[in-house]
Image (tube, rainbow, N blue to C red; front, side):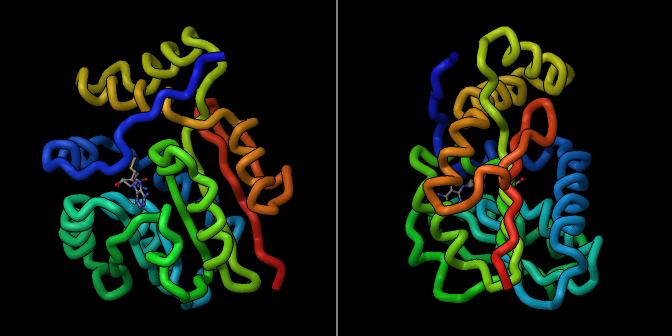
Length: 223
Ligand SMILES: C[S@@+](CC[C@H](N)C(=O)[O-])C[C@H]1O[C@@H](n2cnc3c(N)ncnc32)[C@H](O)[C@@H]1O
């Protein structure tokens, strides 16, 4: 089993933001949105919280897919949110997406509001101890609301990790390949993710491997 090796938490350098935003994540983002809508059903008009929103590619895809979607993008990095604001304006959905700067590890910064759904894509691996952030996300969910968290899964061995980097980032720049390799190293295994969910009082079957490199937590708070 390869050990978890953390990478920097915040992605706030201008070069880092530009490099991340230039990577083509459309296929995985569209799959995230389709899986969320399949689990949740059509948006009901309440606000949806996206934790670690980055440059808002998932909120934009969700707003374009469902005209009732209203999203709050939450992130630690001002430079990410600055780019996110521009992307949202360019996509013509600025009237349904707003942003909050804050740290998911400090539950108070998520505010007292309950959300129709809480989403998060590929941020768990950035957080050294994700338990307080997960507890805060569960707490912010209104009755009947959907929690969907997806992240990379750390493979068991170095050969599998190298093969994933080759398969999914082989054509990318050396910097993008290195970012993907480091992210896989920093990720939880699916067993660690299952223990994390259990620690937040969620059932073990809420976690599943949903691709050869992602686990997904899907849970509906009882109405
Ligand atoms: C790999 S990016 C993913 C962005 C976006 N979810 C996506 O799928 O394109 C991870 C994001 O999580 C943010 N992040 C990391 N730790 C955070 C924390 N403790 N609280 C809020 N955001 C955090 C980073 O600043 C970065 O924007």
